[in-house]
Length: 411
Image 1 (cartoon, rainbow, N blue to C red):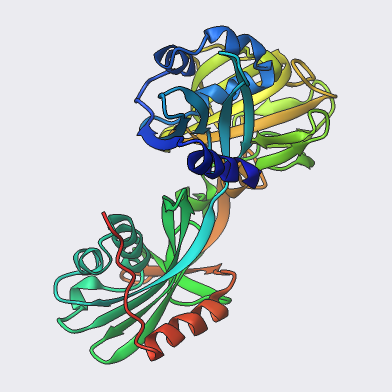
Image 2 (cartoon, rainbow, N blue to C red; image 1 turned 135 degrees about the vertical axis):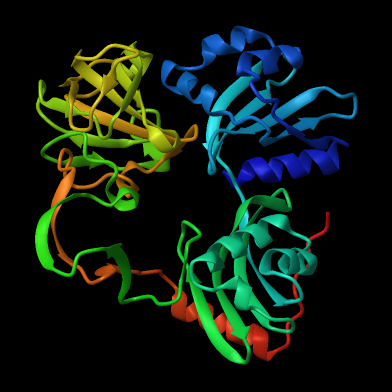
């Protein structure tokens, strides 16, 4: 789909057309946007039922691009609906009508380096060095669980390697910190960062952390699972995944790319569906191509979606418990056979459910051994695996060795 970007640039040079960047108004609908640009809302009739559900994924205050000719007539529009997919409107030749499509977002990823000398704190000094608040924010988060910023002294040093997506030549999305080198009082320490932006002092091995208790005994008992890692269960008792979450999936019928904002689970019709966590039913009814749907709002800004149900068992406004039956597998709506399409949003944005769900749905407690002292310390372990740590460390050290200047972002 890179031809879209090339077409934008070609129009600009050959026909004195101009690309403008604007911010999508908070709360503005796609229909309201069409009216504001004098585009007939009859265009909505040309959009398939499957594609219409993506119109609500346009985020407020997100950048979108318009291509206009030298008389101000709108030729093309690119409006993001996710990090990698966008709506494309194109004016038809010699007509005041527009075509609608959903295509991948084209952007390039570039690597950058910064050498931060500490005079105040990591955030302030990184921003002074790079003139980029997002780089400073992401680095501060990555360091927070590994480096005690209070122990940093004047003239200590932080070297950081990160990547930034560029769209239309401008930064797009948040930067990704890859690795940082912290030199504190002459001692060197490396911080490796995963795809979620969390930093770790070690990778490829089990990292220990402790839980505090009271009695001076060792015993086993049932305890609630750790909230951070175990909050969500599975929507079915027996798991068989037939289609994974992706921002761009090639549709076998439409012969074009479409997002698949969820995970499909294969199961027989009538199989009970389970609430992945406690919450309040925000929707229970028919939703176009999704058929019979139940949505549940959970703590932490999450909302789960259970589509294609044969029968729903809960009503809007009802509170449900984790593991409670909320409906049954079916094949309603646009479906090729009985299955569950499960979607998960966090603060209004679709996320990969399999990064949040646990393998068992209703198990809310586990047997755990505790060793209690005067102040008990129970040791737990988790394995940290981050791709490319060795290569990124070598790159960072080469930047340091060559006294590479920091990249400074323009306003």
